[in-house]
Image 1 (cartoon, one colour):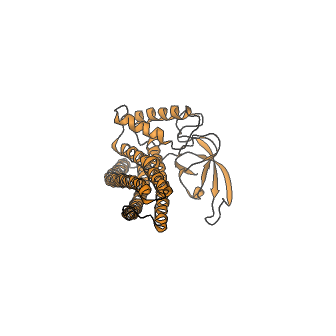
Image 2 (cartoon, rainbow, N blue to C red):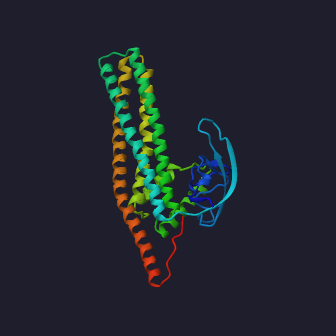
Image 3 (cartoon, rainbow, N blue to C red):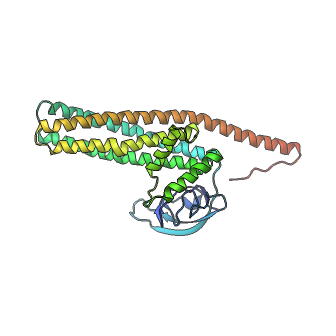
Length: 321
């Protein structure tokens, strides 16, 4: 049986490519594609996906050297939701990977900031040679790449929050209320966007206003997603825009004000990236303790069951996953 830990949402109509967490040799290939709109809720939003539900999926067996899937299979799978402990391990692994991306982005931003600072020194001397234009253009290209990194980071963070929301890791009442809010939000949208940042920003605002109650870990994931969205939608595009305006100037005096504004936005970007890195480090350290305690409780529970079985003279066989 194919075992799925959690079906990640696909709010749009028809076929839409989305990531799905899965286990089992049958679906180790990359490219699991939903054939029905699923949003952690069954099609139509009638109720959350539960164990025993069936979903149709298309599995693309990809060849890394080929631009398109080499083979495609279609099958019906049975949903087998993971336990909260397994789910938290999955979230932890995901955020650890994002931490490496953030650390890389910090190094890249530091390099781009230094390069623009050197360009500013030349502009302040009233010079604007062709070589300097090429350097500013290169910095602009680097900032554009960081915008893509921020977009990926934001999607991964909102996806991680979905694991909390639909995976059974939130208190039941909280999860039901938020899932209903999720359903109402997407049903009201004419254009349904995967991992719509506005939905998660609204959740963060509601939490800050005390309208909803969330545990510390998913709350922090929302904070990080909001910070990544600020980078993606405002800060990095702002740097690119100012550098573009600087390049249109014919003289250093015209380019300098825009380059200075770009440098201010770069400083803001470094602050936000450092904050996200700190949050990820804090989250991982806290989560390590939570996972260790949860694993110990699971192990203790199994030992108690085995001890009870031995006392009753009925050795209990361990079920293989």
